[in-house]
Image (cartoon, rainbow, N blue to C red; front, top):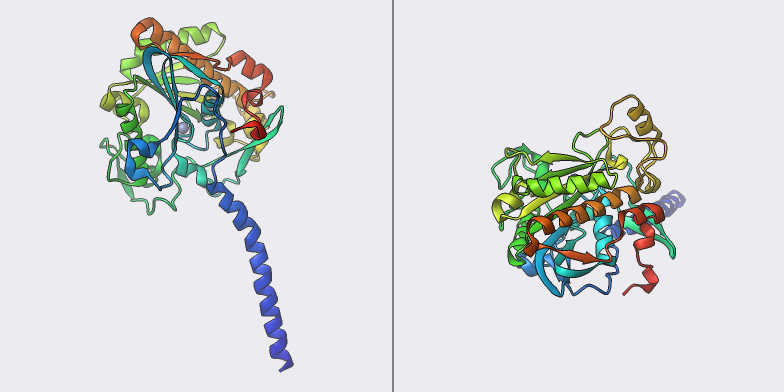
Length: 380
Ligand SMILES: [Zn+2]
């Protein structure tokens, strides 16, 4: 009798202990489903959802915010996507800096900071990545989610063994959850294909003239510090390159390969006829040669293994001990957006887009990204 009582007590205790041990990580895990708020500038004229353009996305984890800045003067329509790949922080943060600072003077600017919202709700398995990275601001630290390159399998599962994408390209199965392989999307397809279709609908319904998709790549990957352009944007990309080089940014041009299908810089141009540009900056945190992943690796970008790899000539970008901080990567994206718009104004003046209060690249590098983020307590 005594033994049974003892066993019951230890069973109850074990259950209690398991409950406690599951509660805290469970609660932390759950927070990945709550997107951080952004604090738009006074220049914001409307906030829509992707489901306003493609209603089947409503109440799915593929729905995402579309921030709209309409100018007072007639011009072109610019779409900027961040977070196509949620493990490439400079793309998302550059688009947040747009949302929190700009005003459109001429034409309209549409910004989608979390293009694959589902990818922000989980982390890449077995990478040991931090759930968040933290940007210091004058009013205190501001955290942002570090997500996964792919849609959350909770939202889209299982993957096929081989994925035949809507553009007819055969890819390995898990690419079915890679937004930048799913264009031009399928209205009745997998969730990621429906997100891609929603973005195409946004492009069509808002009569977008030019789309810029913000990415990062690992320093050992050849397409880096690059402007990838659809052939309909080659002159525009060349003009942007010249002005970026004049500003001291080392950057290269990569033509979108005609036989690599399903990517934004290919299908936006082919299917919607818009000018399509994709930008890449170097991000050590999703490279294979990095040391321990951490928030500071993302924000400060210092990594002794990448510095060593650069010395050995293994990388496609210089990587000194000072690292490649988020501020520099975001500054590159903002400078490139400005350079592309400068080229557009020159080539097609009636489609020009003029942005006021775009954080200057030199200022972002000098003062840090945090200087251009609103304090949470002051936000709306
Ligand atoms: Zn990417």
